Amino acid sequence: MSTPRRRAVINAFANLPIFTAAQRARILAWAGVHSGKGVEIEGGFRIAGDRELWLGDGCFLNHDVYIDCVAEVRFGANSGMAHGAQIITSHHEIRSPNDERLEMPTEPRPVVIGSQVWIGAGSVILPGVKVADRCVIAASSLLAKDTETGGVYIGVPARRIREI
Image 1: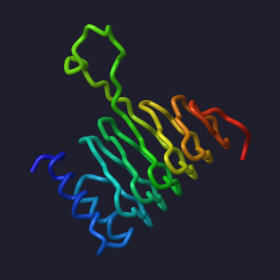
Image 2 (image 1 turned 180 degrees about the vertical axis):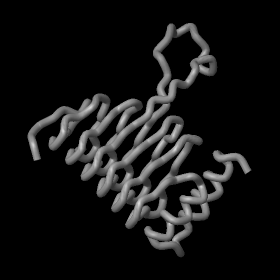
Image 3 (image 1 turned 180 degrees about the horizontal axis):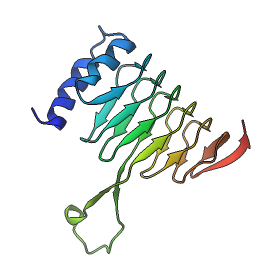
Image 4 (image 1 turned 135 degrees about the vertical axis):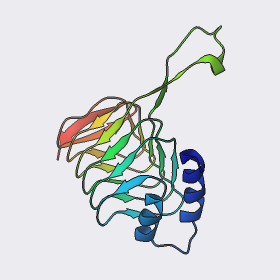
């Protein structure tokens, strides 16, 4: 079975309510997700694409998290995503309005989430972003640029408002 198809089947199976968050992490290993110790994944999540997803020790993905793995996504230890948060790795260049949408090639851009990072509910991390260690991305924020260590980022687009 191809990786995207296998991942779709495993996503659906792992989202059954009979499994605990820890059991979901083990099931997703069959779909090519690399999980450290103590990883917990709540129901309703979706992982798309066929690139690698790495979850460091103690990572937590809450309900309805979406991770687009058109490019690799890496989480450091003890990081998490609140419900409804998203990571996007596929990018399309903006072109002339006369160009056909279907002709726009997808450009994969990896995302790296450092250690001890919290991504708030409904936040979106855009392609190619690196979130430094010990950062908080506030709820409903849109992170389009790399962060610096130990900061709180909020807004659309997200900006640093203070240190932790």
